Image (spheres, rainbow, N blue to C red):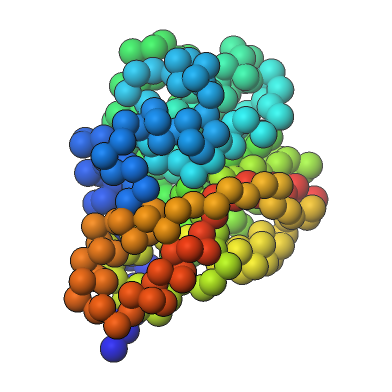
Amino acid sequence: MTTTHSAREVRQAVRERYAGVATKDAPCGGLDGSTKTDDVSRRIGYTEADLQAVPEHANLGLGCGNPTAIASLEPGQTVLDLGSGAGIDCFLVAQQVGPTGKVIGVDMTPEMIARARANAEEADYRNVEFRLGEIESLPVGDASVDVVISNCVLNLVPAKGRALAEAYRVLKPGGRIVISDMVSERPVPRMLEGNLDALAACLPTFRERHLEQFREAGFRDVRITSEKAYPASYILGDPGVAEFIGAHPSEAAELAAFAGSIAGAHFEATKA
């Protein structure tokens, strides 16, 4: 029997998982659990120059793309990063918007915020600010941001529609959202929906539903600009998922088919 967990339970599981990541430098999922974080990041779109340009402890290997590479940012802009983690994308953005621009990172995990602030202070980033908060209720003013970015975070949010509505609220008219996220051609199997470890393990969002949620939030020109397939081991190798398969071997085939349908995708959309 599948157990339905509340949004609060899922959110707490995610928070606990990423508190551990913040203190142990362990990548999300099972893609490269034994690989250095820089190697993980190179595979998903960060250049050697990107990795050399950020503080030493800012990269935790958590992304599924590089939204900063396609955001087409300009000096003086204000950019918001949803689920900013240790700050890698914020620091890359800060260099693009320059001293007259501003970068705001929002993360719900106190340990991540503490690490990001320490990174900013150590490297003397004066145009970057990190705020503790949930992206379903952003601590950011209305129509105050030029561009919203996010990297492999919306797929972890129980109320994705609410998070996108919040992103729409804080954007200025004509503002853009550029997101890297995990998507799949298949809905998440029901047996995983009842497993908190799996729900906190970077599970992807069903592609078509994700696009619909952008439109429902009010965005226009919603599109996926690129996709890159992920190996099935990204899901199947995660400790929580692997434990579940061990206890439910009859579900292994369906889970393998789901894992094989996963890709990292870049989404873009505009506020009317």
